[in-house]
Image (cartoon, rainbow, N blue to C red; front, top):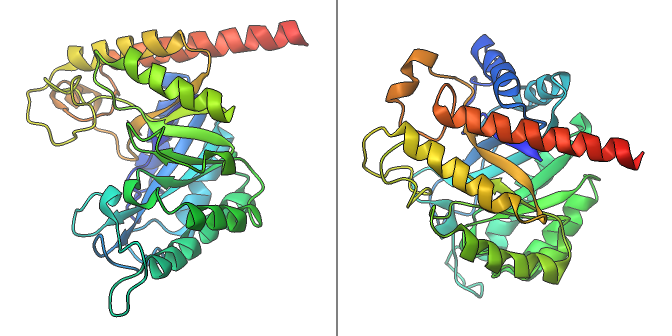
Length: 318
């Protein structure tokens, strides 16, 4: 999968503009992607809230999702739909958590999973109706991962309305902690590993992939263009000056190590916004986007080479 995540965070009204259409076209042209993940967020109030009002702003509307899928398809891209829950108070979703057993007068796992199930089934139906090629059923929800029975039940319900492949995007370092990988079709994770640590982490993940005999991809991976980010690529708030070369070096190393592992099935890199900055502003941008930065050429060259190799292999096999 030569992929890029597009449109995060999915703010209502941001996916249907001329700028958004230009952004997706530019992503396709500049990076040679064959896949895109359409990622958007719905907000629960805080980490212990049990209602996910996905129908409310700022979440993108269904019409916006449909239009984004249609545009991606018109560009020849395969689409993974990725609805994500965030907390309105800024708490990272990995900390959504409740007592292990339901207790009267306290927020409960059963209440939260009922709301999360409604949320996911809504977008599973939308993914089926629009012909999405994959559905990501959760992202970096570390404290929920231990709720194996609830996840298995949710997956059974999703499969009743969506017939395509399912993946769950576990957080970094959690690949060997999820106990229900057998229930999904593709194992995926957020590959925000320090630039010097790829070999050790790939060794660890490889054992998980071999155990479950499932395809694997990095549903997220990337590095901000700032000094120090190659050592802490998951920290989007890290203090540091703009450093385009550090971002480039990170991508070079990540691709070099992953290319040696045939079981790494690709990337949905992080990330490409619906509203691009101007190309002349790239030199001042500290974020993950590679547009008009040296890392963009690294991604484009890698993807083009991998896709050409894949095409040649298909021709030989046919």
